[in-house]
Length: 99
Image (cartoon, rainbow, N blue to C red):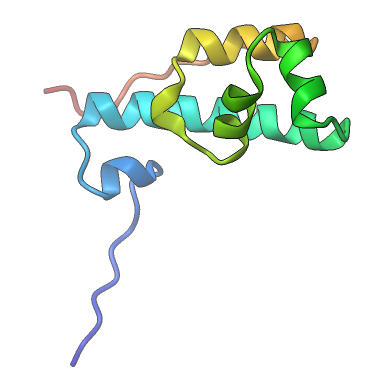
C-alpha cells in the first residue's frame, strides 16, 4: 500500500472539495472567527459578558466559541471584531490562473 501526498492549496476547504467561491468565503469567516476567539480568550470574558460587548445573544457567542462558521456572515464577524476594538484589513492578490 502506498500513500500519496499532495501539496495543499492553502485553503483547507478547497482541498476538502468545496467549490472555490464557497471555500474562499469559509476561509475568510474561519480566520475572522479564530481572531475573535483569540481576543475573547485573551480577555478571559465569560460568554455572557462577551455577548454584551459584542451586541449579540449568549447562544451566538456559544456558536462562535464552538466554531459554527455557517452561522456567521463576514459582515457580522467584522462588526463583532470592531466592537472589541480590532481593526480588520483586507488584502487581495491576483490568482496565477483565472478561469
